[in-house]
Length: 436
Image (cartoon, rainbow, N blue to C red; front, side, top):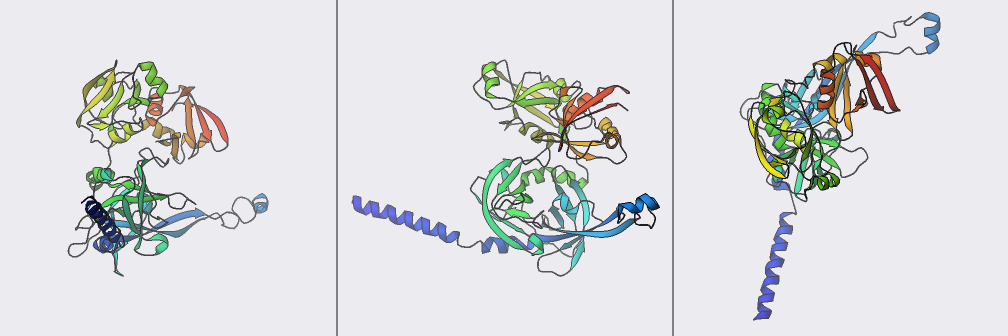
């Protein structure tokens, strides 16, 4: 009897394994289900650029522009990417960098030679998402958006796009990691996959085995084989209503935070290193009004656990301003829940007005406060601040976030002295000026 029972178990396990292997023999059924929802995105950008003088000695003898070489020349620059239709009425998700500054956006559907003019409905550079709209006769094939939170490391995924202009190329792989921060922006939270993603895949969908969109393929590591990154589709779903309105607003608490280290946890007499320690509460901010205090450790935001400090600004940014939420904090070794009304970035002391006057657009990265853009003809240009620099200190005060930079700048009076310590490609640099 025992021998028969063992043989039966072996038979069942073998049959199950063979069935599983058979299911993974081909992804053709899934591809046929979703491939018509994937589109080719091509853009045209009008660029103006000065032609340099051919020889420097011409300048010495004949002046700056003797023969008209420096006159602005206009030319067209074209780019290619991918996208995915998410509704039968023609809404398409893609990457913002695919359509950024485009004068013309064309969409080509699967199996078609006809191009549709696309309207840019909304864009979010910080998340690198854009929403397009085309008008077509009848309903369009579309893909269903899934739940990226339910993805597990090791799950199969399929990427479809137009790498190097090769239309509707299908690749497969697994989820290699979740929650990746690669320094591309303040809200990095990428799905890492080994499904091959190449130039031209940008904006295309990442599917699960149900044929649901779980990510938007976005980034690759140059020279890194089998390493690609996708924006979780849950992030896109959260932003979709705002993208349709054409304007992105982000939630705001008004706290400066830091990681809970092992040493810090021991000094506080706690066992866990989860959460975000509140180092500073911004005056008149939603956090101050709700009663959050310096020294609190934020553990949860509306039921979402904060395991690392960097998760907090990402979660809050995705909450609609004006929403009433519950924040669980640890204070004096006791957990308590605080009710808070989420503010809007830009409405409080972190208002970007003074930063804009300086000519700076900044973002939080894992390496610090990054100068994302220096506005033309601004004070920042005069000071020699460049895109790619990091702001380390302001008036000898170390800064770790854009909120902190804005808080310090906004509290400086007109004509007050100010010194930035910068980390540049060439090393440390100090720039001093008076506030405008």
